[in-house]
Image 1 (cartoon, rainbow, N blue to C red):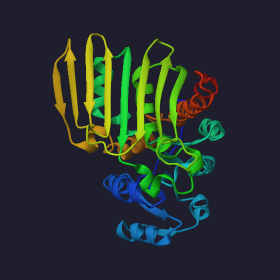
Image 2 (spheres, helix red, strand yellow):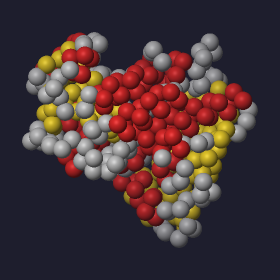
Image 3 (cartoon, one colour):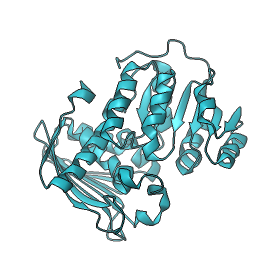
Image 4 (cartoon, rainbow, N blue to C red):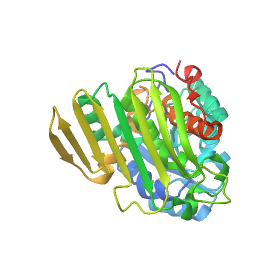
Length: 341
Protein backbone atom coordinates (compact mmCIF):
# COMPACT_ATOMS: atom_id res chain seq x y z
CA UNK A 1 0.00 0.00 0.00
CA UNK A 2 1.53 3.31 -1.06
CA UNK A 3 1.89 5.97 1.60
CA UNK A 4 -0.80 8.61 1.31
CA UNK A 5 -3.25 6.31 -0.46
CA UNK A 6 -6.58 6.05 1.29
CA UNK A 7 -10.18 7.15 1.48
CA UNK A 8 -10.27 10.57 -0.16
CA UNK A 9 -12.72 12.29 2.16
CA UNK A 10 -12.78 11.93 5.92
CA UNK A 11 -15.97 13.00 7.66
CA UNK A 12 -16.10 15.12 10.79
CA UNK A 13 -16.84 11.89 12.68
CA UNK A 14 -15.41 8.47 11.94
CA UNK A 15 -18.12 5.85 12.55
CA UNK A 16 -16.41 3.01 14.40
CA UNK A 17 -17.56 -0.58 14.72
CA UNK A 18 -16.35 -2.96 17.43
CA UNK A 19 -16.16 -6.66 16.53
CA UNK A 20 -15.72 -8.74 19.65
CA UNK A 21 -16.73 -7.06 22.91
CA UNK A 22 -14.58 -8.96 25.40
CA UNK A 23 -11.88 -7.75 27.78
CA UNK A 24 -9.51 -5.87 25.45
CA UNK A 25 -12.35 -4.06 23.68
CA UNK A 26 -14.39 -3.28 26.78
CA UNK A 27 -11.61 -2.31 29.16
CA UNK A 28 -9.00 -0.78 26.86
CA UNK A 29 -9.74 0.10 23.24
CA UNK A 30 -13.35 1.29 23.51
CA UNK A 31 -12.45 3.46 26.51
CA UNK A 32 -9.63 5.02 24.45
CA UNK A 33 -11.81 5.51 21.40
CA UNK A 34 -14.51 7.18 23.49
CA UNK A 35 -12.01 9.93 24.39
CA UNK A 36 -11.11 10.74 20.76
CA UNK A 37 -13.37 13.44 19.35
CA UNK A 38 -13.01 12.20 15.77
CA UNK A 39 -14.51 8.79 16.63
CA UNK A 40 -18.19 7.95 17.01
CA UNK A 41 -18.79 4.54 18.58
CA UNK A 42 -21.41 3.43 16.11
CA UNK A 43 -21.84 -0.36 16.08
CA UNK A 44 -21.05 -3.24 18.43
CA UNK A 45 -20.95 -6.89 17.38
CA UNK A 46 -20.39 -10.00 19.50
CA UNK A 47 -21.66 -13.57 19.23
CA UNK A 48 -22.67 -13.15 22.87
CA UNK A 49 -25.17 -10.40 22.17
CA UNK A 50 -25.39 -9.30 25.80
CA UNK A 51 -21.76 -8.13 25.64
CA UNK A 52 -22.43 -6.04 22.55
CA UNK A 53 -25.61 -4.66 24.09
CA UNK A 54 -23.79 -3.62 27.27
CA UNK A 55 -21.12 -1.67 25.40
CA UNK A 56 -23.59 -0.15 22.95
CA UNK A 57 -25.77 1.10 25.79
CA UNK A 58 -22.81 2.51 27.73
CA UNK A 59 -21.31 4.32 24.74
CA UNK A 60 -24.55 5.29 22.99
CA UNK A 61 -23.99 3.15 19.93
CA UNK A 62 -26.40 3.19 17.01
CA UNK A 63 -26.96 -0.56 17.26
CA UNK A 64 -25.64 -3.87 18.57
CA UNK A 65 -25.84 -7.26 16.88
CA UNK A 66 -24.49 -10.84 16.86
CA UNK A 67 -24.47 -10.67 13.03
CA UNK A 68 -21.16 -9.77 11.37
CA UNK A 69 -22.92 -9.29 8.03
CA UNK A 70 -24.80 -6.30 9.41
CA UNK A 71 -21.54 -4.42 9.98
CA UNK A 72 -20.05 -5.55 6.66
CA UNK A 73 -23.11 -4.20 4.83
CA UNK A 74 -23.33 -0.93 6.80
CA UNK A 75 -22.42 1.82 4.32
CA UNK A 76 -22.19 4.38 7.13
CA UNK A 77 -19.45 2.41 8.93
CA UNK A 78 -15.95 3.82 8.34
CA UNK A 79 -13.67 1.64 10.48
CA UNK A 80 -13.69 -1.45 12.68
CA UNK A 81 -11.76 -2.83 15.63
CA UNK A 82 -11.22 -6.60 15.28
CA UNK A 83 -11.05 -7.90 18.86
CA UNK A 84 -12.07 -11.54 18.42
CA UNK A 85 -10.11 -14.77 18.99
CA UNK A 86 -6.75 -14.95 17.16
CA UNK A 87 -7.68 -17.55 14.56
CA UNK A 88 -10.53 -15.30 13.33
CA UNK A 89 -8.53 -12.06 13.01
CA UNK A 90 -7.28 -12.54 9.45
CA UNK A 91 -10.59 -13.55 7.85
CA UNK A 92 -12.53 -10.72 9.50
CA UNK A 93 -9.88 -8.09 8.75
CA UNK A 94 -9.66 -9.24 5.12
CA UNK A 95 -13.41 -9.01 4.69
CA UNK A 96 -13.64 -5.46 6.01
CA UNK A 97 -10.63 -4.27 4.02
CA UNK A 98 -12.31 -5.65 0.90
CA UNK A 99 -15.47 -3.59 1.56
CA UNK A 100 -13.46 -0.41 2.00
CA UNK A 101 -13.24 -0.02 5.77
CA UNK A 102 -10.25 0.98 7.88
CA UNK A 103 -9.29 -1.95 10.13
CA UNK A 104 -7.54 -2.18 13.50
CA UNK A 105 -6.52 -5.80 14.14
CA UNK A 106 -5.74 -7.30 17.52
CA UNK A 107 -2.53 -9.31 17.64
CA UNK A 108 -1.60 -11.69 16.16
CA UNK A 109 -3.14 -10.58 12.84
CA UNK A 110 -2.86 -14.13 11.46
CA UNK A 111 -2.01 -17.60 12.77
CA UNK A 112 -1.09 -19.54 9.60
CA UNK A 113 1.17 -18.92 6.61
CA UNK A 114 -1.83 -18.84 4.25
CA UNK A 115 -3.61 -16.27 6.41
CA UNK A 116 -0.50 -14.06 6.33
CA UNK A 117 -0.39 -14.17 2.52
CA UNK A 118 -4.09 -13.47 2.06
CA UNK A 119 -4.14 -10.63 4.58
CA UNK A 120 -1.15 -8.88 2.99
CA UNK A 121 -2.83 -9.18 -0.43
CA UNK A 122 -5.99 -7.61 1.00
CA UNK A 123 -4.01 -4.72 2.49
CA UNK A 124 -2.26 -4.03 -0.82
CA UNK A 125 -5.58 -3.88 -2.67
CA UNK A 126 -7.46 -1.90 -0.01
CA UNK A 127 -8.51 1.75 -0.01
CA UNK A 128 -8.60 1.84 3.78
CA UNK A 129 -5.88 1.74 6.38
CA UNK A 130 -4.92 -1.36 8.40
CA UNK A 131 -3.11 -1.30 11.74
CA UNK A 132 -1.98 -4.23 13.90
CA UNK A 133 -2.07 -3.90 17.70
CA UNK A 134 1.66 -4.30 18.37
CA UNK A 135 1.61 -1.48 20.88
CA UNK A 136 5.22 -1.97 22.05
CA UNK A 137 6.22 -0.04 18.91
CA UNK A 138 4.30 2.95 20.32
CA UNK A 139 6.00 2.89 23.74
CA UNK A 140 8.16 5.90 24.69
CA UNK A 141 10.59 3.41 26.27
CA UNK A 142 11.14 1.40 23.09
CA UNK A 143 11.42 4.60 21.05
CA UNK A 144 14.12 5.81 23.43
CA UNK A 145 16.04 2.56 22.85
CA UNK A 146 15.71 2.83 19.09
CA UNK A 147 17.07 6.38 19.19
CA UNK A 148 19.97 5.53 21.56
CA UNK A 149 20.91 2.21 19.89
CA UNK A 150 19.98 2.46 16.19
CA UNK A 151 22.26 -0.47 15.31
CA UNK A 152 21.91 -3.09 18.07
CA UNK A 153 24.18 -6.12 18.12
CA UNK A 154 22.29 -8.43 20.49
CA UNK A 155 18.71 -8.42 21.78
CA UNK A 156 17.22 -10.56 24.53
CA UNK A 157 13.52 -10.70 25.44
CA UNK A 158 11.59 -12.81 27.93
CA UNK A 159 7.89 -13.51 28.36
CA UNK A 160 7.17 -15.29 31.66
CA UNK A 161 3.54 -16.03 32.50
CA UNK A 162 1.70 -17.89 35.21
CA UNK A 163 0.18 -20.89 33.49
CA UNK A 164 -1.88 -19.08 30.88
CA UNK A 165 -3.18 -22.51 29.93
CA UNK A 166 -5.38 -22.31 33.01
CA UNK A 167 -7.11 -19.31 31.44
CA UNK A 168 -9.38 -20.55 28.65
CA UNK A 169 -9.14 -17.24 26.79
CA UNK A 170 -5.90 -18.46 25.21
CA UNK A 171 -7.13 -21.86 24.12
CA UNK A 172 -10.82 -21.82 23.24
CA UNK A 173 -11.27 -22.59 19.54
CA UNK A 174 -7.60 -22.18 18.62
CA UNK A 175 -5.66 -24.93 20.35
CA UNK A 176 -4.26 -26.03 17.00
CA UNK A 177 -3.05 -22.56 16.00
CA UNK A 178 -0.40 -21.66 18.50
CA UNK A 179 -2.03 -21.10 21.88
CA UNK A 180 -0.15 -18.78 24.22
CA UNK A 181 2.97 -18.46 22.08
CA UNK A 182 1.21 -16.84 19.15
CA UNK A 183 -1.19 -15.05 21.48
CA UNK A 184 1.42 -13.46 23.75
CA UNK A 185 4.99 -14.13 22.59
CA UNK A 186 4.18 -12.39 19.30
CA UNK A 187 4.57 -9.04 21.10
CA UNK A 188 8.22 -9.64 21.96
CA UNK A 189 8.99 -11.20 18.58
CA UNK A 190 7.59 -8.16 16.79
CA UNK A 191 9.52 -5.86 19.11
CA UNK A 192 12.95 -7.43 18.52
CA UNK A 193 12.28 -7.42 14.75
CA UNK A 194 11.43 -3.69 14.89
CA UNK A 195 14.41 -2.82 17.08
CA UNK A 196 16.81 -4.83 14.91
CA UNK A 197 15.87 -2.65 11.95
CA UNK A 198 16.56 -5.45 9.49
CA UNK A 199 14.88 -8.43 7.87
CA UNK A 200 15.24 -11.79 9.66
CA UNK A 201 17.00 -14.48 7.65
CA UNK A 202 17.27 -17.48 10.00
CA UNK A 203 15.34 -18.89 12.96
CA UNK A 204 16.08 -21.78 15.29
CA UNK A 205 14.09 -22.90 18.30
CA UNK A 206 13.87 -25.56 21.01
CA UNK A 207 10.89 -26.47 23.16
CA UNK A 208 7.40 -27.72 22.45
CA UNK A 209 4.56 -28.92 24.63
CA UNK A 210 6.28 -28.98 28.00
CA UNK A 211 3.54 -28.04 30.41
CA UNK A 212 0.17 -29.18 29.00
CA UNK A 213 0.15 -32.91 28.27
CA UNK A 214 -2.56 -33.99 25.87
CA UNK A 215 -2.66 -30.63 24.08
CA UNK A 216 -1.16 -30.32 20.60
CA UNK A 217 0.10 -26.82 21.24
CA UNK A 218 3.57 -25.32 21.71
CA UNK A 219 3.53 -23.80 25.19
CA UNK A 220 7.24 -23.09 25.82
CA UNK A 221 10.18 -22.33 23.57
CA UNK A 222 13.55 -20.62 23.29
CA UNK A 223 13.92 -18.89 19.93
CA UNK A 224 16.98 -17.43 18.16
CA UNK A 225 16.81 -15.05 15.21
CA UNK A 226 19.57 -13.87 12.86
CA UNK A 227 18.99 -10.68 10.83
CA UNK A 228 20.44 -9.51 7.51
CA UNK A 229 22.47 -6.77 9.22
CA UNK A 230 24.18 -9.26 11.58
CA UNK A 231 22.02 -8.48 14.62
CA UNK A 232 21.02 -11.54 16.65
CA UNK A 233 18.13 -11.97 19.07
CA UNK A 234 17.24 -14.60 21.65
CA UNK A 235 13.77 -14.93 23.16
CA UNK A 236 12.53 -17.07 26.04
CA UNK A 237 8.77 -17.56 25.93
CA UNK A 238 7.31 -19.69 28.71
CA UNK A 239 4.08 -20.91 30.26
CA UNK A 240 5.77 -22.67 33.17
CA UNK A 241 4.20 -21.36 36.34
CA UNK A 242 5.20 -18.47 38.54
CA UNK A 243 7.06 -15.40 37.30
CA UNK A 244 7.91 -14.43 40.88
CA UNK A 245 11.66 -14.28 40.20
CA UNK A 246 11.13 -11.43 37.74
CA UNK A 247 8.70 -9.35 35.76
CA UNK A 248 6.35 -10.89 33.20
CA UNK A 249 8.11 -8.96 30.39
CA UNK A 250 11.82 -8.25 30.17
CA UNK A 251 14.04 -6.81 27.42
CA UNK A 252 17.76 -6.11 27.02
CA UNK A 253 19.41 -4.47 24.01
CA UNK A 254 23.18 -4.22 23.48
CA UNK A 255 24.99 -1.99 20.98
CA UNK A 256 27.06 1.15 20.42
CA UNK A 257 28.65 0.75 23.85
CA UNK A 258 25.26 0.99 25.55
CA UNK A 259 23.07 -1.54 27.33
CA UNK A 260 19.34 -0.78 27.54
CA UNK A 261 17.08 -2.75 29.88
CA UNK A 262 13.29 -2.58 30.18
CA UNK A 263 11.92 -4.28 33.29
CA UNK A 264 8.20 -5.01 33.20
CA UNK A 265 7.61 -2.07 30.85
CA UNK A 266 7.69 0.28 33.81
CA UNK A 267 11.40 1.07 33.96
CA UNK A 268 14.05 1.75 31.31
CA UNK A 269 17.71 1.72 32.35
CA UNK A 270 20.60 2.80 30.12
CA UNK A 271 24.16 1.92 31.17
CA UNK A 272 27.62 1.98 29.62
CA UNK A 273 28.42 5.06 27.55
CA UNK A 274 25.06 6.43 28.67
CA UNK A 275 23.66 6.22 32.22
CA UNK A 276 20.01 7.08 32.64
CA UNK A 277 16.83 5.74 34.23
CA UNK A 278 13.22 6.40 33.27
CA UNK A 279 10.10 5.17 35.07
CA UNK A 280 6.58 5.32 33.62
CA UNK A 281 3.18 3.81 34.36
CA UNK A 282 2.52 0.37 32.86
CA UNK A 283 0.05 1.24 30.08
CA UNK A 284 2.26 4.07 28.83
CA UNK A 285 5.28 1.79 29.13
CA UNK A 286 3.84 -0.80 26.77
CA UNK A 287 2.29 1.83 24.49
CA UNK A 288 -1.23 0.58 25.16
CA UNK A 289 -2.47 4.12 25.75
CA UNK A 290 -1.59 5.11 22.15
CA UNK A 291 -3.38 2.49 20.03
CA UNK A 292 -6.54 4.40 19.18
CA UNK A 293 -4.83 7.76 18.73
CA UNK A 294 -2.39 6.18 16.26
CA UNK A 295 -5.25 4.47 14.40
CA UNK A 296 -7.15 7.75 14.18
CA UNK A 297 -4.10 9.57 12.84
CA UNK A 298 -3.57 7.20 9.93
CA UNK A 299 -7.27 7.46 8.99
CA UNK A 300 -7.36 11.25 9.16
CA UNK A 301 -4.04 11.86 7.40
CA UNK A 302 -4.24 9.04 4.86
CA UNK A 303 -0.68 8.04 5.75
CA UNK A 304 0.44 4.49 6.34
CA UNK A 305 -0.24 3.12 9.81
CA UNK A 306 2.69 2.70 12.25
CA UNK A 307 2.17 -1.07 12.19
CA UNK A 308 0.74 -2.07 8.78
CA UNK A 309 -0.30 -5.65 8.07
CA UNK A 310 2.78 -6.42 5.97
CA UNK A 311 4.89 -5.62 9.06
CA UNK A 312 2.49 -7.18 11.55
CA UNK A 313 2.54 -10.63 9.93
CA UNK A 314 6.32 -10.94 10.34
CA UNK A 315 6.01 -11.95 14.01
CA UNK A 316 3.53 -14.68 13.07
CA UNK A 317 5.87 -15.99 10.35
CA UNK A 318 8.83 -16.02 12.74
CA UNK A 319 6.90 -17.94 15.40
CA UNK A 320 5.57 -20.43 12.86
CA UNK A 321 9.14 -20.91 11.62
CA UNK A 322 10.19 -21.47 15.24
CA UNK A 323 7.53 -24.18 15.51
CA UNK A 324 8.90 -25.71 12.28
CA UNK A 325 12.42 -25.63 13.75
CA UNK A 326 11.25 -27.41 16.91
CA UNK A 327 9.78 -30.18 14.75
CA UNK A 328 12.67 -30.47 12.30
CA UNK A 329 15.55 -29.85 14.69
CA UNK A 330 17.07 -27.60 12.01
CA UNK A 331 17.68 -23.91 11.42
CA UNK A 332 14.83 -22.52 9.31
CA UNK A 333 15.53 -20.01 6.51
CA UNK A 334 13.31 -16.93 6.24
CA UNK A 335 12.24 -15.24 2.98
CA UNK A 336 9.88 -12.30 3.45
CA UNK A 337 9.95 -11.12 -0.17
CA UNK A 338 6.28 -11.81 -0.87
CA UNK A 339 5.23 -9.92 2.26
CA UNK A 340 7.53 -6.90 2.37
CA UNK A 341 8.39 -6.23 -1.28
